[in-house]
Structure formats: structure tokens, C-alpha cells
Image (cartoon, rainbow, N blue to C red; front, side, top):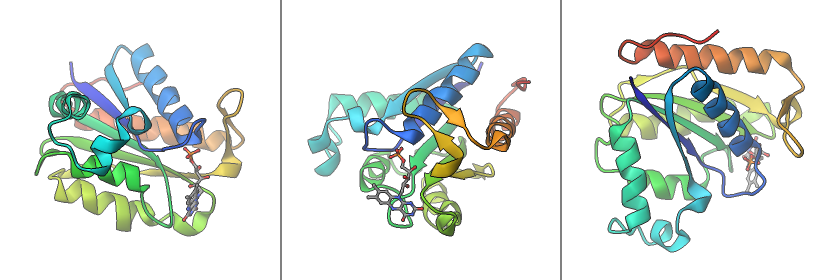
Length: 180
Ligand SMILES: Cc1cc2nc3c(=O)[nH]c(=O)nc-3n(C[C@H](O)[C@H](O)[C@H](O)COP(=O)(O)O)c2cc1C
């Protein structure tokens, strides 16, 4: 069975995008998939800031990615791009560290104006890390998702889009079955 890693890129707590990471993880676990989530905000800040390739925490995260066939990056958009902490972590992934991995970006933003950040900011980094299979990302705005007490989708279409995106990812993995 394939391994899937979710990289949750928000530095904030609580975080809308990390609530979405947990939601995706729950769906995958319920369907019997092997999933690990890396919350960037839980990694040592100094190791990220000073690009400490020798950090045991960073090595552990790298190893989860190395063993995965599917990588889901769930992140807020910051200043029309990815948060700096997420990029600091992606910088610590070895060259071509996403070769033979299918990547799914899931991005939340305050405005639809930065919908294309998936195409012009996130995806080019996944490509340069060697992923040749980036499935269509999901972008949603804050008014479509609430997360304080519990995750809730104001727009039910979002759930359908997320499940469709998960199925697109699973379909690209070796011998995976889809979810309902
Ligand atoms: C520092 C900062 C920069 C942001 N920049 C943008 C932006 O450029 N475009 C946008 O649509 N939303 C922007 N936002 C809004 C967040 O992307 C949005 O609220 C997101 O859902 C937050 O996710 P989180 O709760 O997981 O951190 C920004 C928020 C912060 C804190």
C-alpha cells in the first residue's frame, strides 16, 4: 500500500489549513490509507531558519517524505505566495526529493485574487523538486471554511472538490482504490 504524507504549511495555531489537513488525514485513514502529517509549525524554528540539514527532526520529516508516494501540501497563501516557513522546509528537501511522487496542493486564502498562486508559486517548487505529477490543486477562501470549534464548509462544493482531488491523487498512485 502507498504511503501518503501531508505537509501542513501554516505557522499559525489555530489554523484553517491545518484543520483541513486533519480533515484530509481522517478521510484517508478511514479509507485504510497509510498517512503521516508533518506540521511545519512543530518543527524547530532555528533548524528551519538556519537550514540545519543535520537536525534530527528535519531528518525524520525528510524520511517520511522519502518513503511516500503521495504528498499533499496544505497551506495558506501568504503575500500571494507560500508562507516563508513552508519554503524554509521545502528548501531542506534534498534535490529531486519529489521525484516519482504525486503532489496535491490545497491552498486557503483570504481572497480569490490569489487563486493562481498554486500555478505560479507552489507548483514550480514541486516541479523543481522533481515531481512530474502534480494533480489539480484545490483553492478555497476563508468565507467558505470555518474552523474555530470544528471544521465546517459553508460551501458544500468544497468537500466534493477536496474528495475529487484526493481521488485524483490516489488514482495516480500504484494500485490504489478510490474513496466514495
Ligand atoms: C501574513 C499573512 C499574509 C497573507 N497574505 C494573503 C494573500 O496574499 N492573499 C490571500 O488571499 N490571503 C492572504 N492571507 C490570508 C490567509 O491566506 C488565509 O486567512 C488563510 O486561510 C490562513 O490560513 P491558516 O489559518 O491556516 O494560517 C494572509 C494571511 C497572513 C497572516
